[in-house]
Length: 238
Length: 238
DNA sequence: CTCGGCACGACTGTCGGACAATGGTACGGT
DNA sequence: ACCGTACCATTGTCCGACAGTCGTGCCGAG
Image 1 (cartoon, helix red, strand yellow):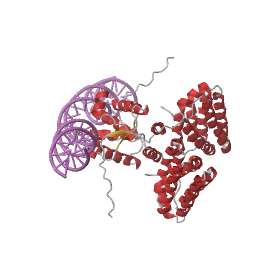
Image 2 (tube, rainbow over the protein chains, first blue to last red):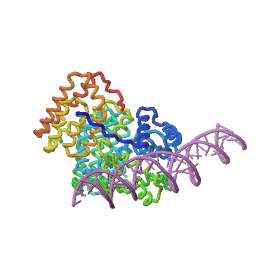
Image 3 (cartoon, chains in turn green, orange, purple, yellow):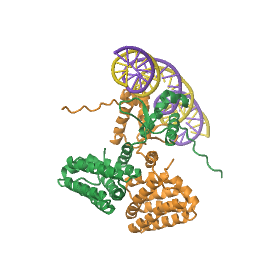
Image 4 (tube, each protein chain N blue to C red):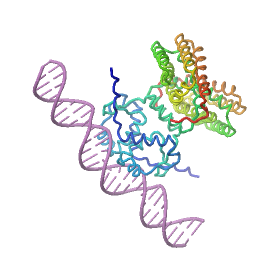
């Protein structure tokens, strides 16, 4: 018995070019903030046509590795921003027919320990940011500020993984959260209370307090959806 | 005081085309498995050049929305595969300088509740898959099977969000896990024991058992890294 | 009638060239 | 030192072309 041949796959040039450039970025050969060589220059270096280079560039752009400063025409290398990545993740989840329950369950698992870590490790600046988000929500009860609050909590853990994991969830819930807040009268005050308590716990570095209040906070979300008559088994759409 | 104008942004045609196609996919107008119209056809419909369409296609491809059956030349619409998305997420995390400690901490937060949910909701098929992964690792102690084991656990929760959240973590750890297993003699048996216990707990639907053994299992990883002399503050590379 | 082979057509991957628009930049004037 | 301007580089888009190949349908052999 001879061992079978590997299925040979011919990768088109634009994929190879993209892979080569991605490699150069992940090895920090191109650092964040660097200007990329011009398309013509790249084409010359790779020995391919400019059109081919452009196709490769689109791939990096979609991965968030390349962005253009507002109103500028030059492309810069960047570390992928969390919300950009989260958008892709969110789309993937939607296409996998995730339900509100799925997302809520994930939040109920992830957020309490995140809050706990935030309480332990927050800096003065983190706290300021967190309280800022909380005050913003008191002023204007927009789901955007709820998202900001969660982002501030995650950021206070100083663990990029946690931030990255959590953003898509909130992003997915955000639209329906607005509807829920509008329909359920007591939602506003319950959210405000929970946020305040969490802020206090984080301020006094009370890991236990942050965890229990975050647990309540997330549980409230589910209660809110039920009161608003939103079917938790409903598939989330964009 | 007049309210300020929105900063007007001119989006290039290839972005608009991509956005339009993504919209058609997320609304299920194009369903998974459908063939896309040919590039020429799309160019005619959008009223742009084929090159422009091709640039847009690369973006969808990079988002995992378009794939080509092996050896085929036709493009098909697909729901983004978890490992494809995970690759992008992983790259983003690497570029954000995540450390082993960051990833490990996230796993220590996420995995125990995931195991708990898996024990509650697993089907006979899930169990089979899980035990299969466990047996594979016993046969050949490759980190790939560790990843498979975690994937099986997450899949048993029947919550796509959890699977999606967890894959990048294991993926990031996988290479160094191999090194750790090679360096620490007792690592193999400890992993095997933990996996067995988790399997048993999942089999008997013992949520508590699954959680506690998963907690131990993840804690072992950290211990293993320390014994192998791997600095936990080290930034992960690809 | 079924199956394998063949020819044709459709489509993708890649190339070369071209041009308008505009951001970047260096120069020269104040 | 600062500002305006003219030039240059670069991006976005289009056109046309061609090789390679996958899919498909036709046809002849068994």
